[in-house]
Amino acid sequence: MSQADKHIDQYRRKFLGQGAALAGAVTLGPGVMFTSIASAKPDDQPVSSEVRWGFLIDTNKCADNCTECVTACEKENGWGSGSADEQHSRADQKAQWIRKVTVRDNRTNHSMSLPMMCQHCAHPPCVDVCPTGASMKRADGIVLVDKHICIGCRYCMMACPYKARSFVHEDLEHQRVYAPRGKGTVESCNLCVHRADKGEVPACAEACPEKAILFGNLNDASSDIAKRLASEASTEIRGDLGLDLGVRYQGI
Amino acid sequence: MTGQRAQGKAHSVAVTPNPARPALALRGLATMALLFGIVLPALAGAPKPDIPEAVKGKQCVEETGFMRKNHMELLLHQRDETVHEGIRTKKHSLKNCFTCHVVKGADGQPVSAKDPRHFCRECHDYAAVQVDCFQCHRSVPSSDVTRGKL
Image: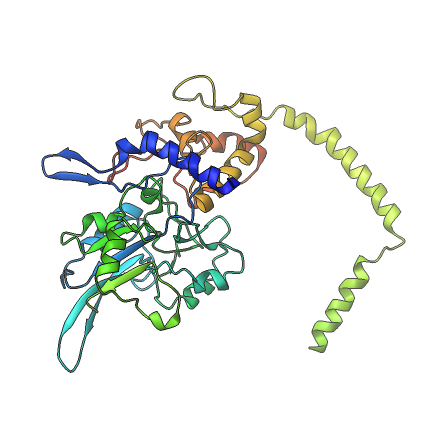
């Protein structure tokens, strides 16, 4: 047995021991469900490439005027309406981890609405161009910025085909404990990495009233997301770039 | 272009050894002697940092002397493990520091790193070492509105 296999076995043993209690859904109160996913990992274990986190977003369910996912992200990660610190930046300078985009077909007048955020590419251009290694991809496919080594050069913002990254222009003070962010660094959706590590669903997916955002492990054939991806049609936005996205859309 | 080159040359001349060095060194020594003779006694009288007591317990996550000397190493190690590998053990986390090392102001609310009474500021101000952590990290425990369990 190789060293890697042993490591995985230990991981599984631990997981089966502690994880059973975490799996499934826990009822917090009448009608309030706290959804968790079965892949919670122990705190002291590193993330592994056995997992690849991703979203499947059904734009058919996504309502035009609904911005619940955006609001939930703002509140969770302390940007936009979730922060009182960014007072001097113009609206187009302020952080935007996730936004709603409305697309209309001029010939048919058919319009649709979809949430747009970091697509968590398997081959992320933002990581390619980063001069310090701050823009990085974790083993489990989450693309994020290590703000400790980010120098704020913003090459990644230019490289991203999805305009997913923002730059913080102001001193901040009231950040969330689990979502540090500060002046002079770049940031973007990190799939609520603090939640994913605990086996919880990202804030946007949890908040969506239509359950249009499905979060899960793309590598696990038995997960809901992998099953749906196998049985239903889905697309990558700008799939022609060949970046192998972690976020896929339906109905576009 | 030519201007830049000329500048570069001037710079390289400045760093070559020059005969005035020994004299300079002597002057340096004299300055040091002066500093130690005059400034140090003044420092001895400077107020020592008044280190606030931890909120709960007397023993830190490691032995106190070790923590005084090595807390930055622990935090640096933990930060890389957390951001890059998702290892989120509590023991050496910055968050754990502030579950115990909270200083409350007159209003009963924890003071942030902007306040010189903040736990980190007490020693860091004394030693004139800047803490960069709080440019991004929250410096007080969260009275979090969204999740209520931090």
